[in-house]
Length: 128
Image (tube, rainbow, N blue to C red; front, side):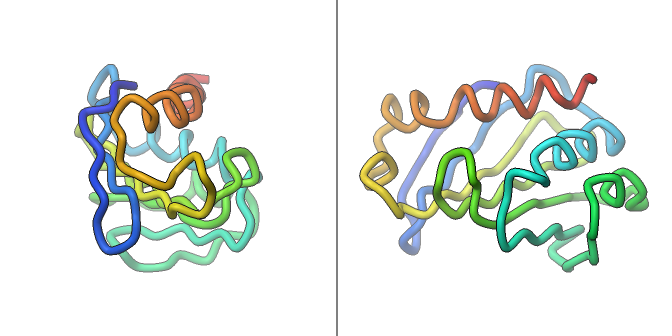
């Protein structure tokens, strides 16, 4: 995944990422499902509306729509994060709370270094 840009907005770091390929619903649902167990206070939203999810397998059963988002406290990067995937697009939006020193400012190079491997892992999980 490629970081297109990052900016500070309303107290969050807002970034846009580009997937290697445009992907469909089943593929992005796999990506969301792959990180579900690594979040606390997790919410999954479809087109901005919360969906009741008990297990990561529930995510794979969500009917196709325009967007799917996972948000909560990531136990991997240790900050609140929201990742929004778009059906049939190569774009992914990521919002990260500046809750630790690593995510205090919108510096492209530092942000890319902090989040690139995490985002790449999600993209790879989409194809398992």
